[in-house]
Structures are given as C-alpha cells and as structure tokens.
Image 1 (tube, rainbow, N blue to C red):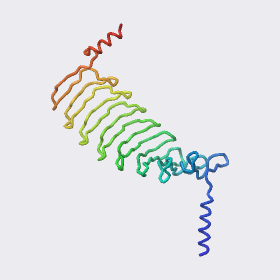
Image 2 (cartoon, rainbow, N blue to C red; image 1 turned 120 degrees about the vertical axis):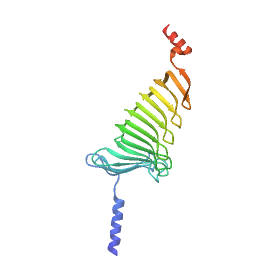
Image 3 (cartoon, rainbow, N blue to C red; image 1 turned 180 degrees about the horizontal axis):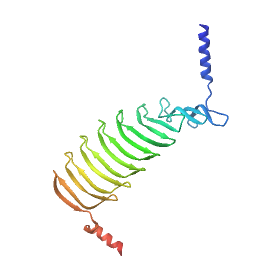
Image 4 (cartoon, one colour; image 1 turned 60 degrees about the horizontal axis):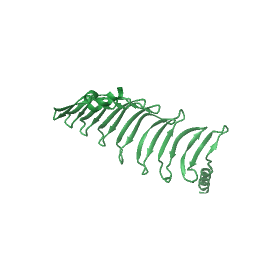
Length: 236
C-alpha cells in the first residue's frame, strides 16, 4: 500500500514539475508552451514545440472565454501543414480545413449554424481560392456554385431552387458579370436572358412570362438617349 502511495506521489510531483516555455540549446522553443493574453493570466494558446517546430495539438482561446478553445491546429513533424478547426463559443464546429503556415490549402468546409451539415465547400491553393466553391441548403442539396481562379471569380456560376431546379446561370470574368446569362422560374422556364459586359447589361435583353416572350429591352448606348448624349459629350 505504501509503495502505491509513493508511486502516486512521484507521478504527481513529476506532473507539477514539468516546465513550460523553455528553449533548447540553440534558443528554439522546446517542450510544452503556453502564452497568456497580454497583461492577464488568461490562457491565449497552448501546445508543444520540438526544437522550434510545432508538433501535436495546439489550442487557441478567445479573450474572456477559457473553458473551450476557439480553434485547434494539429501539426505533424514532417512539414508545416496543420489540420485546423474553428469553433463557436458553445463548442460547435464552424469550419475546418488545412493550412500550410498561414495559407489555406485544399478543401475547407463551413457548417450551417447549429448543424453538422456543410454549408459551404471551398478549394484553396497557396492561400487563394482556386476551383469550385459550393454552397448547400441545410438539407444537403446544392444552392450555388462558383468558379475561382487565383482568388478571382472566373467562369460559370449557377444558383438552384430548393427543388434542385436551376434558378440562374451566370458567367464571371475577373470578378465581373461578363457573357450570356439566363434566369429561370421554378418550373425551369426562362424568365429573362441577355448579355453582361463588365458588370453592365448590354445589347437586347428578352423577358418572358410562362415561357412566352413579353418584352425586349435594348441596353445599347446608341438606343439610350441619355447614354448617347453622354457619349457625344465625351467626344467634344
């Protein structure tokens, strides 16, 4: 019985004796590391370093809330890539993905409020949006899709009704609407169509009701007296 008591005493003493915020012989952080918010005794983050390299799980806390982390980063020993998760104040997962240093990479997922259903899925390369962004309804069906190239909207964008029918099909070029576009009603009938150029409607747009053409409107400058007047004034 005495042996058990002394063993427990030894392990307790060892646990309390563990040192934190220490450096190795080369001046690099090594071992358990904790940092408080400046001027307070509240923990800001905690984790472990191995000769200056983050390893294992790091926990980060928000000021005034120390009962549960606001974010975690799970590091490995081979590189600087970490599996990252962000949490709400109640501990619910908000988003997750990977980071290489401070840059997001690969797929990032964002979740609906008070739900474990994915709300948005984004693709990153070297910290910038690249590829298809998908937005979901809470029931799991697609709401919208966007195409990104080096952080800029480029290509097709589609939005869908909750019944999965197409609501509109847009085209972006360098973050601006540019190209032929169609809008649909819930029965998939076209309600309007026309072209955009640098975020502005151009040419003849057509408007429909119950699949029948009811109106045409010309957005060309030459057909708009006000725009034509401005255009002529610019030439003088």
